Length: 82
Image 1 (spheres, rainbow, N blue to C red):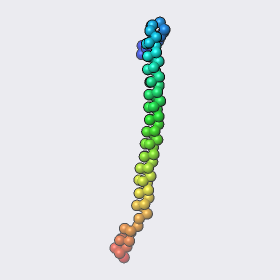
Image 2: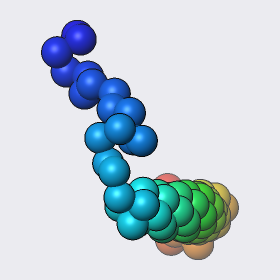
Image 3: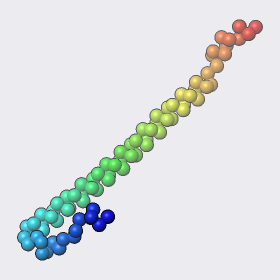
Image 4: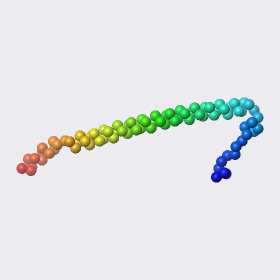
């Protein structure tokens, strides 16, 4: 397990230039903003999927309910029974 984890580095010793530190901070900020945007998009996609799925299920169950109530075919079978 310890072989899979990258070793920690001391940023002040191994990266001597301030420009590199500033660039790292800038990239970290941009990455955090990107992660926030992706989380918002994922949440919106989940909500949209649930709404669409519930709409589809609603139409399906309503159509099953409506077909179950139809009885016009029963009227056609009555003359045959007599």
